[in-house]
Amino acid sequence: MSRLQEYWGVGPKTAALLRESVGASEAVEAIESADVRTLTEAGLSGGRATRIVPGSACARRCRTARSPGSASPR
Image (tube, rainbow, N blue to C red; front, top):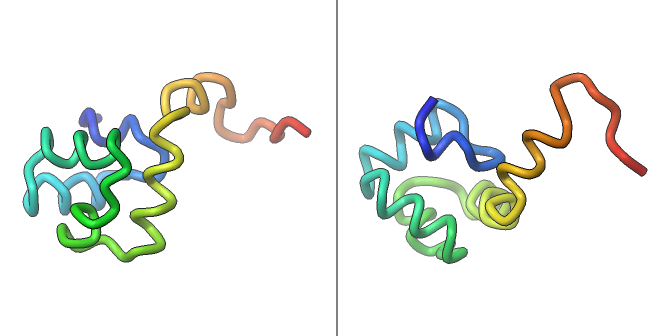
């Protein structure tokens, strides 16, 4: 799994697109700084880019707090 895939909403295809378009380090920087423009210029739709950005703040926490198939907290 690549560093990009640690972010919520970034799977193998999205990570590959970002790496090929802007490079892994610039993509990580764009996610961390909420730079939706860079993400959309890399080829992501505006909706996908805005969904990825808010998830970056809790990417590691969210993935470790909930395992696949577990119920969402209410």
